[in-house]
Structure formats: C-alpha cells, structure tokens
Image (cartoon, rainbow, N blue to C red; front, side):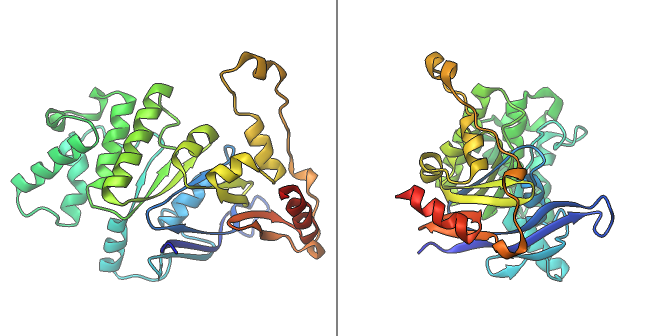
Length: 310
C-alpha cells in the first residue's frame, strides 16, 4: 500500500463568511495524495481548484477542515522554524510565468532566493553552482543566470518557475495550471519536464488544470471539481473509460479530437446543478462505486452508478 503524503479532510474555504455575498470556493472536500503520484484536479474556471491548492499550501487560511502533510496539521499553530521547514517541503508552480517572477531580479537571485532563506549553500560559489545545476536540470543554460525575466519566452519563464520550486529540494509540488498560458507545443515540453523530474527526484504532484486531455497524460488519478465540490475521483484511465457523474461526462464530451468525421457528429453533453436537487434526507456524500472510484451522490444514485458499472 502506497504511503499517504497528504490528507485533505473536510476542507472548506469560504470568502466573506457570514455575509450575504459569501462564496463557498471550497466546500467540504476530502481526498488523499500518495507519495510519488500525480493527482490531477480538473474543472471549469471558478470551480475552486486553484483555491484548493492555495489553501493546502497556506496562501489562504482554511475556513474549516484539516490538511495533513506527512501526518502533521498544515493549518495548526506552528513556530517559525516549523513553518520554514514546511515551506521547504511544499512548493508551488504558478499559472502565470510572467507575473510570478520579480522583473527587477536577475534569474540567479530568483532561483537562489529559497537557497538563501534556508541556508542551503555554504558559500557564494556553492550557491552559484546550485543555480547553474538547476538551470541545466530544467533545460536552460548557465549563461541565463545573469539575465532578467523579460528576456525569456513564456515557456522559458515557466522553466525558471520550476527551477525556483526545485531549489529547496521539496517533496511535494502544487502545479497550478502551469501550462495554461503557454503555446500547445510548449505545453508538452513542460509536462514532459515535470514527469522527468518526478522520476528523477521522487516528487509528488497536485496538478491543477482545466485541459482534461493533458491531465490524463500526466496524472495517476484525477479529481473533478464543480462549484467547490469534489464530484468524482478515480484512476486516470477509469475516469476516461467509465465516467459516472454527469458533470464529468459533460467535460469529457467537450474534448476535441483530430477527426473531422467524429467532430461533425459529436454530441456535447451539458450539465448544470439543477439536474441534482438534493434534500438533507438524500445523504449526499462521496461514495465508492468500485475500488478507487468515488462519486459524490446519494445512496439511490449510488445503486444506479453501480448498475452502470456492470
């Protein structure tokens, strides 16, 4: 049995709590991430997937629930040294490679920021050697160390973001839509790089995206979010071959294929929350339909999904 690295228990992230305009960005979700795997988290814009990642890494304080990293509560009270250690073990790659790099800093200083904070280099020479090694690890050259972010393309800037995340030797990386701002050809290069680094360094990823075809390529398991709720969670191949929740089916039906005949006759499935009008008596929760395949549903729906599985 694989070791749990991250446990999310009944996580809630509400904005403007208690006010008429309260937003339940993340609404009582639970899942685990196992050491060495990639969990993909998908859904439309505004569904809460990025907020989930930011709450996990403490960019937002959780409204309720628990985030356990290596068995320790992320949102519990921590000393400065404990926070520092946590920040080293968990890193984030941001969506926008243009906004996430300080334009006034040279590449060497951007990458070495974490090295300096955590005292991972004993001398300036060792610091620069680490920077050069990281640049080469992500497919750039040591000559790039003295340049500024504006001198790089979008794909190169995202590689710099990856190098910065790797600098502190983390165990877990949250990749928040790291390829959505890039050209399609560059997207594949960045995803291949992330997979290569995972094998070499034993990394664990939470890969947040809305491109289902790319998520299938990189993920071991996939969670689907809709309006703050996790509605389906399954191994990658199973989710694509046997989607059960109507929202998952609608997402999959929207994936284009390079086949004119298929595209001409493709029927897109639509979904909205009015298709599910639950009451308290329905006892809606994540239920295991088959081993490892969970769906947010009532007990009555569960029986229907189990029949569909046969």
